[in-house]
Structures are given as C-alpha cells and as structure tokens.
Image (cartoon, rainbow, N blue to C red; front, side):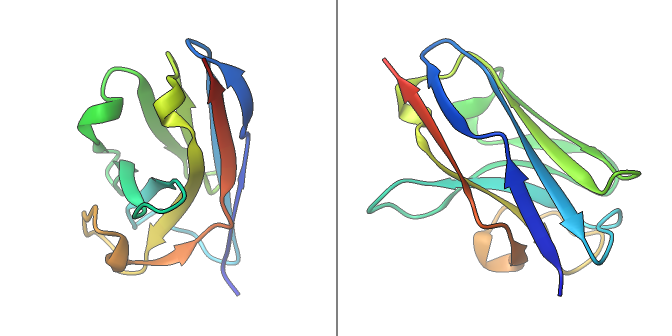
Amino acid sequence: QVQLVESGGGLVQAGGSLRLSCAASVRTFSRNTMSWFRQTPGKEREFVAAVTWSNSLHYADFVKGRFTISRDNAKNTMYLQMNSLKPEDTAVYYCAADRISMRLTTKKRDYDYWGQGTQVTVSS
C-alpha cells in the first residue's frame, strides 16, 4: 500500500521558518505531480504548492515569495521550506500525489494519495 509520511511540523514564532518533508514508500512518483495542501478547522483543504514531474513549481498567491517546494526523486521525498511564517499559516499540512502521471492539477479531488498530515502552529 502506498504511503506518504509527512514530518517537520511544529510550533514556531511569527517570522520563523520550518521545513516539511514528505516521504513516499512502495512506489515512486517521479512522473507525477506532488503537492502540499493545508487545512484549518471548519475550512476546506486548500492548495499550497505543487512540483511537477519536470520540476515546474506552482504556488498559491498567499505563499509566493515565502514558501519553496522541491523534490528529490532519488529519495522519493518532497519538501516545503516555509519562511517568514505568519499566524495565519497555522494549519495541518498534507502532502499529496497525483495518481495520473504527467498531469498538473491543483484540485484536491484529483489527488489519490495523501499523507496523514502534520501540524504547523505559528504564534504571534
């Protein structure tokens, strides 16, 4: 069974940084888009950033210039470097992988594989 496991969440002060990791097991996603989403209580899960099979990067407007997504296919791992964190970035962050290869999508319904989530809390 395919597993995506996030790590790196935690508590940080506003203006600080965190680096999230997402390790995939059982299969490789080198030909698939992988993304980060986030969710707060009572709100829909929202797109944060995506990295395609060709290393094209895509970001939600609210993280542009602050977050950087990357992937290491040799390690089957994806990362999210989060800088200049704000209290409104507080959420559970999920990594996801698209089942269909060589497709760029930011819609959560298109992602078949999800991690369990990691909590990021930014204090003011």
